[in-house]
Image 1 (spheres, rainbow, N blue to C red):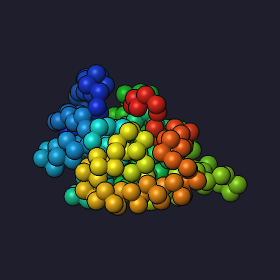
Image 2 (cartoon, helix red, strand yellow):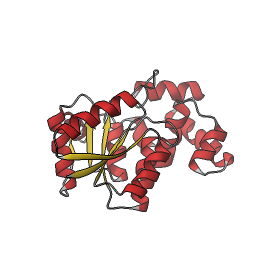
Image 3 (cartoon, helix red, strand yellow):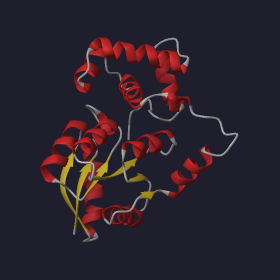
Length: 215
């Protein structure tokens, strides 16, 4: 039986995934988290075989949660499960160290297959995502402007896009407000944005955040 930590900020989503996975009798959900901080804490306490990680969650979010979990335990196996199918998120999460990437419209059998593969030491990327990543490497394809951002700049941009203030971002990332202000200036410069509204518009255009912030 594969032990799984399930993270998602929507209780109904977690309940549905739990029922589908546990009905298979191959997976046991050992814990649930609805924010990034709880994901990090439960990953350390429960030591699950696999973590199903949502991206858009309150607090530090799924990107930073994934980074912190793997920083503490590089052997932890994480599969991203999200609505985001644009190439930006898969590239970022795989660079951090996630072993799988699924979208929430996948079939339960695909989810189980991904969990089994990752649990057994492999990796799994949804075919549509893998195709996008492969096509992005072909000559002549335009590079996504978000790719120019560092890991921390990307994290700060996500938090800005979700309406967090400098003080809130500073607290969640354990960085000084002055450092966050510096990251904001870098974001404006790298993305050719004039202000925060422009940053959010770029985030929406690139598919890394939605106006409804639903995931």
